[in-house]
Amino acid sequence: MKENKNHNFYFKIGMNGLLIVCGGIFFYYILFHSDKLSELINAFFSMLTPIIAGLVIAYILNPVMRFLETKVFGPLWNKIKRRKDHTYSKEAKVIRLLSTFLTIIIFIALIYALVMLLFPRIISNMQSILGRIPVYFLNMDEYYANVLAKYPKLETMLKQYSIDMTKMFYDKILPYFEEIISKTSTSLVGSIITIFKSLLNFIIGIIISIYLLADKEKFIAQAKKVLYAFLKRERANNFINNLRYSDKIFGGFISGKIIDSLIIGVLCYIGMLILRLPYPVLIAVLVGITNIIPYFGPFIGAIPSAFFILMIDPKKCLVFVIFILILQQFDGNILGPKILGDSTGLNSFWVIFSITVFSGLFGILGMFIGVPVFAVIYAAFKTLINKRLEIKHMPVETSYYVDYDYDPDEESTGGNSGKSFRFAKKTFDKVTEETYIEEHDNDRPLSGSSNTDLLLNEKEEKTEV
Image (tube, rainbow, N blue to C red; front, side, top):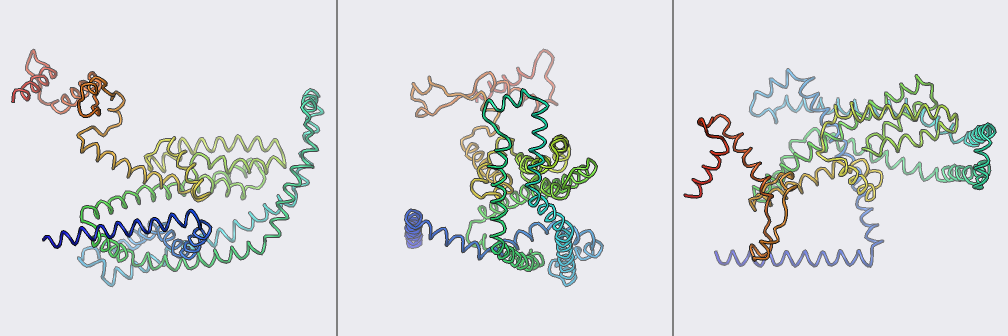
């Protein structure tokens, strides 16, 4: 026994030393070779891009596959479920393969429909916008000239502050957009190469997702096997529970947001057709995609869209702004709560905080995934805090700590090394009394006695014991 203890002791010392050495090497490279380290990390993640794409595609398509597996092939599946070995039976494998391939076919059909139906219109609209930018600015110049002619006082005020609208358009704004167009044309070859690489990674990702969906139970079982081999059973169980909770938050938010944004995009397209606003396909796609980002998404999609319409007709731009405001109010107050509910458990402050932090760390991708990822981190930290409070026999509800204050008198007497605290007595007694009354609501007091008297009598009996 002593030899085993000594062996474990020296093993822990060796592992700690190894971790310290590895950490020192890592920080050395961060301080003196950060460029090489970043290149190495980028190359590593670039190599893993197809695998990550496959994992993401499989995660997104898993609910669709489960629906096909249990609903479309339901009668046959229910018959197989009665067997104890249904997971590994031949019939179950056939159903899984059919569901997987049908899911992939639906996914590819949707991608094909988007590419063939939406992309040509989007590209046509973008080419029209870029090609007619000088004409749009001339129209805007003429419009503002007419406005200034109708309102001489406004023209006088602008001249007083040395603001020449025409000069600003021709000297600053127009050259800026011409520079963007020239840069876009010169980087066309690099864009084609990037698109080809992304397409190749996407195809490999689809192939990987097929294997993941077809044998997901086997992969999950292997992962559990590794966890229980290297961790204690309690820690492994906690880790699995945390993963399930993360899947519930992340999956619920992502799927709900995609459905919500798809509905908003369709409504935006229909509304723009009814109001006869320009570029309905391009703007509806832009509004729908950016709507996935909470809070900031509607503004990110609406501002450039409003600018596109402003270059054609300022009056239609005003109509578009009013329409988008109504649409976003409908989404925020009616549609969003119906679909998402309180899927993340975060209030508005933490949502804005997570988007700001993750967008700074990961750019546009961080704005999309920041809220669900931070919700998982927030839930894990909340669980840790609650466990530590329970160890100290302290309440975990935040409302208790509104009237929870520091006791300077107890510190001056040296009680608990200056770390003693107390609840405000009035609030604590009230909460205790209400809790006791709720628990003993069926035990009616005798005549002339109250629940409060019973509570006090019980406290006195405990004190005597």
